[in-house]
Image (tube, rainbow, N blue to C red; front, side):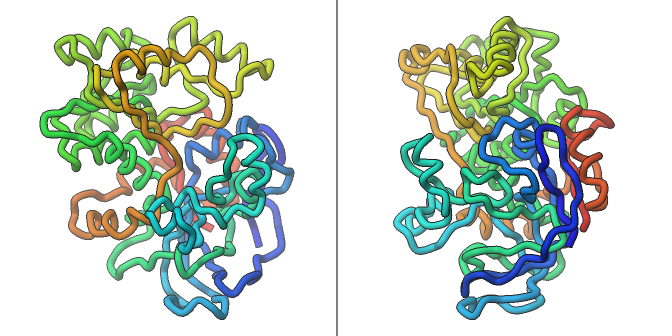
Length: 389
C-alpha cells in the first residue's frame, strides 16, 4: 500500500509499504477514505519530537471502512464506516473506566520510554513516534486499529466524511479545551492560536456559554476565519501587544479563561520569542513557551488556563509566580476523544456545527509532501489539509 512516511526533519515521502495485518483478536483493518494533516504533525515534520525512525508512517486523524476484523470484535461489522480516535485506549484499565482515555495504562508498548521522560506513560498514539507506541499512522491506504471494539465509532447514515473526520482529534480537542475552562455565564475566554484546534475551541466556548471569545494570532487568514466563521473578536499580536489589548478589551480585568492552542513551537513578537528560538536551536530548551508566558500573565485572577497545545519537554522562564499569586487553575493533556465522540456526533447531526468549515485544502495521498510544506509555511491561506487515499 501507499503511505506517508517520515524520513527526517522536513523530509516526508509517500512510500510503498507492507499492508497491515491483524495481530490481535481485538484488531481491525480499515480502508482509509479520508485523513488529515494536524498541527501536531508539524512537530514531527520539524524534527522536535524524539524517537521517530526513518520510514515511520504518519497521521493520527483518519477514518474509513472496516475491511477485516479480529475474532474478538463482536460489536462491529465488515463494511461499517468508522472514525478512529487518535488516542489508543483499551477500555478496561482504571483510567479508561474513569473516562480518562488518553491516559490508558495498556496501549503503549513502549512505556519504558515515556516513564523515563515523564514518570508514567500515557496512552499510545497513532503515527506519533515510538515514545507513544510506535504505531503506524493513518496517512495511508489502510491501517490497523488496536482495541477496535473500544475505539472505532460508527458513522450514522447521511453524514459525509468531511463532517465527521475531525471527531478523530481537533474537534474534541478544541471542545475539551473549552470544557476545561468551566465556563460560566458572562465569561470572557481568550484563545491563543487560531489553527484548527483554536477554531474549534472558539466555537466550543460559545456552545458552552461564553459571552465573548477573543482570539490571538498573527496569520491574517486564521484571524479572518476566527472572526467570520467563529464569531470571535481578534488580536494580531504582531500589530499590538496582546496583553495590553486584552486588558483594554476586558476593562482591566483580563479574560476569565485562557486557552493555549499553540504549544511547543510558539512564535512571538518579543525578546523572549527570540530567546526561545536560540535556545531550542542549540538544544538547550525543548519547547518554546512564548504563548504560555503571555497567558499566565494575562489571565484574570482566579481564572483557568486550559492547554490543548502539545508540550514535549522542558520549558524555560515560565512565570509560575504569576500563576500562583493569582490563584490560577491549570488543566491540560491529550484529549479523551472517546468521551466526546457521541455527544459531538449529536452536535453535528443536530446542525449545531459543521466541522468541515476549517478545510482549506484537499489533496490526494500522493500530494502529501506538498500539503505538509504549504501547511508548515502557511502558504496559499492554508489552515487545514485533508488527504484522500
